Length: 148
Image 1 (cartoon, rainbow, N blue to C red):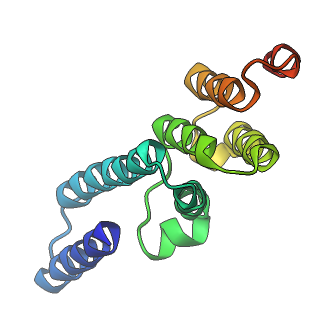
Image 2: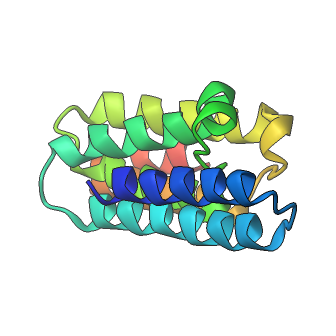
Image 3: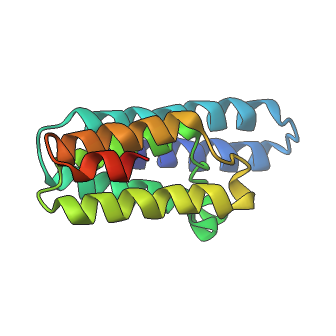
């Protein structure tokens, strides 16, 4: 898995700086930027996948990103707005549409209340949610009620 390899590089680069006694923050900043982009690329792949199981993989990945123990102990980056958008859109592949809607609403709630993430509400996430609703409820009267 590509993310596991990135964590290995991260671990090696951090241990290398400690060994050399370097206190520069520059490499860590570059590593963090690359890593959240890499996580978003993987979430984007799950979004574009045709495999229903990839919805669950996307949920698992964003939950690891949200988990403070993972970000503190092994350097998993915090999610971005794009992370949430890609995950909500990936839920459209779930066979259980009620579960997909429930998980999307749970993610939106997490985004809004989790101050540690520092992201707040976003129109992009709500747009992704409306796209998911349209996919799940296309042609049904409930779509209008849910979207409002």
